[in-house]
Length: 252
Image 1 (cartoon, rainbow, N blue to C red):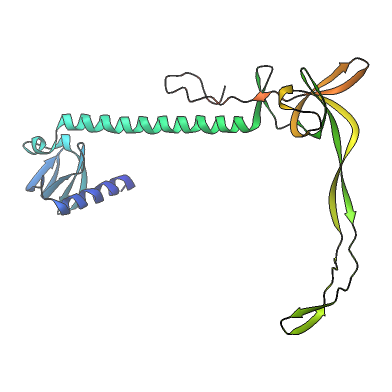
Image 2: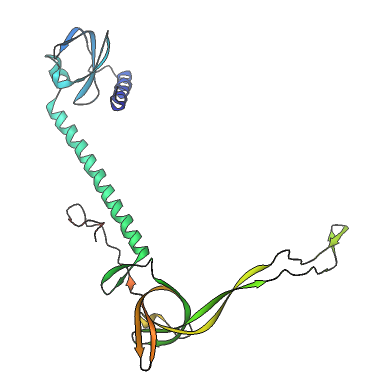
């Protein structure tokens, strides 16, 4: 039997344990030409029910019951109300799913997109910039880039520093021996300058800047030419337009 039908029968059985309402035994019950002996009718909603009989168990539609049992167990108004409630529940779940999907897409865009020249641009392929602001201009900043190197630090030799005391006992000599060498990252200012188009009010001379930016070509400053980058503006998260909107959250 289908899992949903078994679940419904189990629910009907639980209801039957708590109440004997709407139960009747029938010596011979015929539904759509099929006969059941010693039948017991148990509805489990406004549309479907079950017939327990000597031959086993049978799922039925209450509308198919013969009179007078049809009037006793089937009510078309209850069926319409139940169907309307089920449709409303399904539609509500659908709207919740659509709103959740929209929210996830907007959150993803907020983290990975910025607005450049009025367009949404994915920052995944942008250049990572690590530098120091050298000059603040009306339309952006001049940045002196850092040069990052991994410097190898060799192991330190063993240096005795006296006996270590453990309570009332003297132990072995303490030392600062490092068994293996390590690497340390060092950042020094290079002589490479770039231009970043951004809101100049957000920056001051000498400030460190770590960000990603979109390469847009070169920008000329008199006789000097710098590689130019664009940071754009943050992605403006949009609220869900609701079910009446024809916009698709995947094609904004």
